Length: 127
View 1 (cartoon, rainbow, N blue to C red):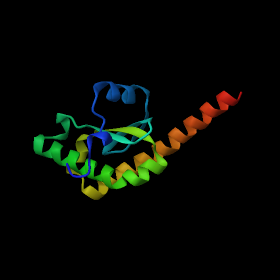
View 2 (view 1 turned 90 degrees about the horizontal axis):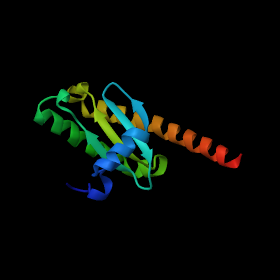
View 3 (view 1 turned 120 degrees about the vertical axis):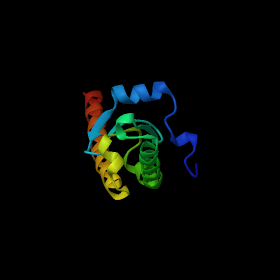
């Protein structure tokens, strides 16, 4: 894997479970992205058999990894969170461009949601 080291991947079941249970969710027709605050953005992928056969699932995973890899510098600035991407069945027929648009729309929404959450927590602390 060129330029996608283990430090940028969610690897442990506990990390997946924490993100899935406590994270904020953004939904599109192609992807569901769940994010939980963390120091360095990491990517976890869930692509079930509903998406298609193995070669289709692998294609979706490769595309999402590449989108994440290219967006990483921007994600570090706007969204410091572990991200778990759940691919929907429609993702297997989507183009790279449409997957990228769905990913960006979801991460923008998550950045807003996490910023809003941190502001609310700051207000609670101030009170």
